[in-house]
Image (cartoon, rainbow, N blue to C red):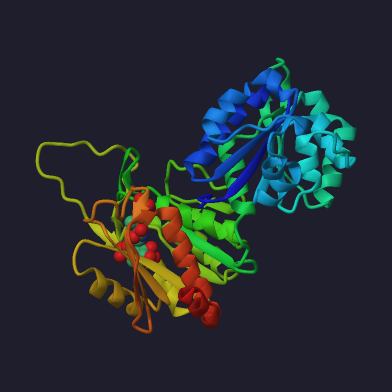
Length: 406
Ligand code: PMT
């Protein structure tokens, strides 16, 4: 989602400066245009050539040696930026900005800013704990500057504590979030994700291939768009998205319990989880021995969570998913009507790049009025964005018509 975004990345003089090279790569990989500004001290830690190579743009270091002031002066940089990020940010740069000082290219760019500024502190633990630094951070937060918490752990100076460069993924996610319009603010969205596990002895269970990627993408995107998000997840190896209420469950019955507990407070429910329809009738406390003959396995129906929600959904928006291997649209439409959903997202598990485990999906979004929106293959995060557009559009149909026309 950073495609085409214009980022000014300010690097200041700390041992973590080398990590800004990796950060630059990450932004470029996501399609952003990055212009790097380095302070005099930053150049002692990492060479401008490295950043030039990674960003594909000239690196700006000195306010007074510009060959084309009209093109890359501080005012132009401020106008150009969709966001200014300072990473790593030393105690010195934070203090200078908090005091309104502007004595080099980075500080003058920040003083002339028109875009959001995200500051990622990285410094010695004692410096980070210093009240003067803390006061400067509070002052800047009160002036609408965005701050990342410094990471915790062993620092390059050997000290243990807070002061590490924040994790790259967290910085990128924060940038994505800052640059996303908060059009879902006020919505409380409950999302289920991942598979369920239905155990039949202490070491075995039945499950399905869901990784959780589709549901987690919805949670990340809904949070970026300003919604208050609760994510109920079956077993998944994915990182818990930051900034969402996260509830871990395992079986369908546990998932049902968590959904019922949280549904009352929600305005939208999206059920992307692949809930096991059946569970073993009997759970053996001891590992079942394989024996000699065939093994009879009896299953009982699990609660159909979405149907239960559908019966009492009130004015909540209920979105379900359907994974199918045949008659995709017919089956999905039938499920939507039977389970009283407002929309259903149909994905065909037989198509390459769709359904379980892939980073992409190919979906059709069906609504109760007979509408069908067919999306091409796209990243699950973009699919999530389009599903949320649909939800947003159903709240204010005129704005969605406008968006479609543009
Ligand atoms: O997790 P990934 O690897 O990214 O894969 C994504 C996905 C394929 C799991 C996802 O896109 C998807 O299609 N999820 C729903 C799969 C599914 O269970 O479909 P279904 O047709 O069996 O169920 C229909 C709807 O009823 C679903 O919203 C499901 O959450 C819900 N349901 C199903 C059974 C049940 N007992 N309770 C339910 O609430």
